[in-house]
Length: 164
Image 1: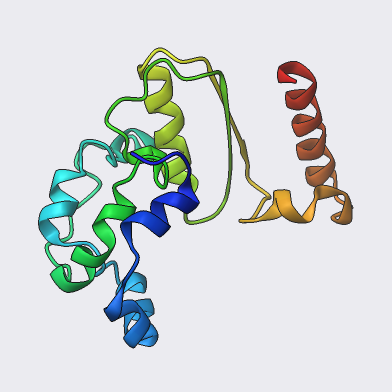
Image 2: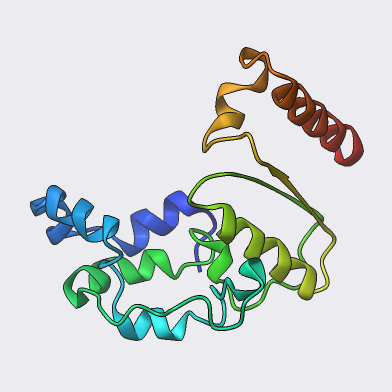
């Protein structure tokens, strides 16, 4: 295991010929969830099960397709817990965490991660902001002069005061 996400990428994926040789095809494969093999998707269902998010058992169908050529190039990075902490098999004994989700493609993954942290016995607080978008923390709420943005900004300020 490596010490940080950048090292995970550098050490585990020094040469990605499919990605480098055909970026458009790689982007299309990711867009279509074809970058992970069906077998790998099946193996990850216990960790990435979104059933409790939707409240319906069996609501997360496992795709039966995937490109082994792409997966073989990406798997060492994608399965490294420093790159993808949600995929770690053991989330116990971690420091207190704050998980902040917004309405984007990662919302369910963040919700699953917060739940797994709790189940592993960690102290975790999960906040969800319906009016947010991916990257809003980088941009800052102050530029969005709406009541929702102010509420979310206040929530973040309270989190910082409480934990730092």
